[in-house]
Structure formats: C-alpha cells, structure tokens
Length: 253
Image (cartoon, rainbow, N blue to C red; front, side, top):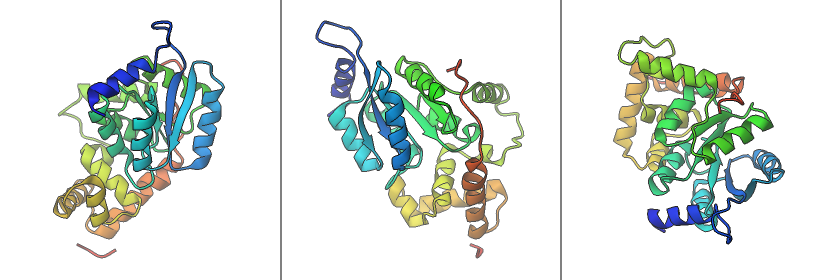
C-alpha cells in the first residue's frame, strides 16, 4: 500500500455509508507490556467515539497491524519489542503522513516529548496520566491537534526563544535527536552492532554517535556511558511524575 492508498483508507475509516458521519475512531495500541495494552483497551472500549482495532508489541507486528486494520490513530510507547519506538514514529510519519500518533511512555516528558514530536508524533503523555488525560490526548490528536502538557509547552517555547543562546542546564538537551535515540538503546543494553542493525546504520556511524555523546556528556569510557544511560533513562525516569494537563491537550575506549 502506498501513501495515497493509506490516506484514502484513513479517510474512509472515519465515515459511514450515510455519507460523511464520523464514527468511532479506530485505535491501534502498540506497547511491549501486555498489562498496559489490556488497560488501554479497557479504557478505550468504554468510549462511544473510540474503539480498539488491534494491538502490537513489536515493530513488525505494528507494521502489519497498520496495513491490515487501517487505524485512525496510533498510541505507542517508545520502547517496543524487537524494534525502537523512535524509528516507528519516523516510519509511520513517512508512509502515513496524516495518521495521528500519540506517544505514551514512562519516560520524562521534558526529555522525550520534543524529540518524538520532531520525529513526527502528534502528542506525548506519560503513563502516570489519568484515564481522562489519556482520552483527552487521544481525541486531541485525532482532531488534528498537538497534545503535550503545559509544562512541556512552556519548556519548548522558552527553548525556542533562547535558541542558540542558552547554556543547557540539562545535559541531555545537548544531544541531537539521533544521539538521544542511540542513548536510549544503550540504556536497553544494546551493543553497537545491535544498535546499528536496528537503526539501519553502519557500525562506524553508531560508534561516531557514541563518541559524540560521551564528549557532550563529559564521559570518558563506554562503562561510564552505559551507567549514565541506565541511571538517567531507567532510574530517574521511573520516578517521573509529570502529567498531561487535561485542558491543554567499565573499560575505557
């Protein structure tokens, strides 16, 4: 299916035979945790204007579900089995330009929201959000809006005004989107070779990214890099308490 066919299916899925009346939006849930998928399904199926068309826990499964079920919106984590959520967002946006994507993740929204939006997502909500906040965000992206918390929106606006002048207090903010993507995979224990394969890049390119990350974060070894990744993405983010505003949508190398 090419992009134009996908757009036709997306449009058709939102109308009924009577000629244009909008029906329940079809939601594709992508998450590597069965309990999360089950919880989201229960929340969504209680709503008259939303329905779950499929679930997936791998990148391959997500691709197949999109082709076979033609969802109106995707809600996905940035951690998926046998793949990477960042790559999934970019891939979906490239092939289905108008398909809304809402990222639902445990990770700190002040770190991840802006990168995933730049990759093509339409919104970001943390797994600490309430049922009402998740539903609000889903409906907002389905209707063509952007859904982030007030805190993230403020952070992005301040960053835009200070672009090129700000001395970042947050070390992660020094990283490019690709470097953040690589660091995320490092935190999952992936080797350079595995990361290269997953991102369809050469090993040499991944090594270059790792060296730049270490330089920007003032780290001297691969062991320090791994420890930083684990501490930041798993340790700190596991306790992140940010929520979506319901009204706004080693050895040395």
